[in-house]
Image 1 (spheres, helix red, strand yellow):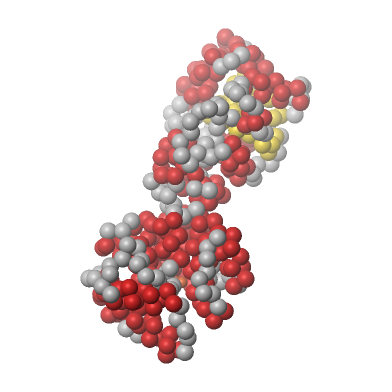
Image 2 (image 1 turned 30 degrees about the vertical axis):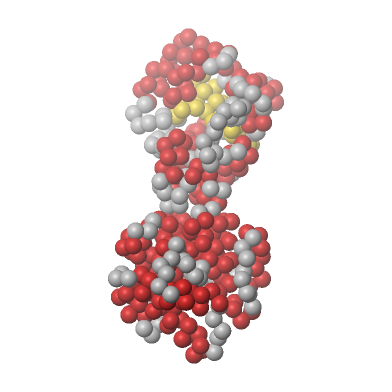
Length: 390
Ligand SMILES: [Fe+2]
Ligand SMILES: [Fe+2]
């Protein structure tokens, strides 16, 4: 059998890995591909937000899951202490002694291969498929391949590939800055967000792609309007624009869910739903939306709170909470009577705009014969007392 194997820490696995594996599998006509996430040395202090071995295994599964003949092997991941490729190769060879076993590696690994533990033995029993890590490395690969052939009788083949200019190290720092999603398979990015790995901050466009399917098509213009309004307000009032954008993108995500399911989300997250009665169903989506934003998209506590209070408001709101509440109220698609006055005020005096909007909302609810949520009255009373908030 013609098998390939590809090891690495995959921390995280990215499109550079996936494209190299795809190219190798195609060009070598591999019948099976083993992905072997490496273990991390015991007692090594890992940075905050580092994935557990189990999480690295899950990410590798998401990244390479579509390969035919895929085997995800956790041999090195579970082996205590330092693991050596030679041990793994022995085990793979024992499974199929007559078969052809291809090691897949990038230029940097290939350069040091003879110096690995039992490197010369590895070169004598394996076939090696080398892919360029950066553009223009073809010549270097060919020179090394020629030397290894001469010195070790190695069997080497260069994989034709346009390299994806990214590394896991670079990616980890991009993710912290709310960037880098384009270098990751979408399910891996969703997993990183959900589990808040690498101190990730969401990249708005990638987050929107993940969130869009949660919305009814008819709600999308409102959500996008709210998104741009929230960013404008955040810039005007010195809040974090990325937090405001994240909260706005997710603020109505549970709106099309049945109440039962929304209450289940709140229970799962431990979000109390104060004073819930069926006639207050319209405000339930804010509480369940906050729960879903945390459970599914790993948002920060500040963003969670802004989503949670975006419908009712509450006494002593944070700046971000006020911004998301108002963005939802004044976004360009809204045509509620009196909204223009609130729009104008929102960029002059945030608390005045909020007071005005809360007064309008309470009047409207009264006129409709609905009992408002107590938190809405408390929000207004707090502002009327002249207190300015958190
Ligand atoms: Fe809402
Ligand atoms: Fe909304």
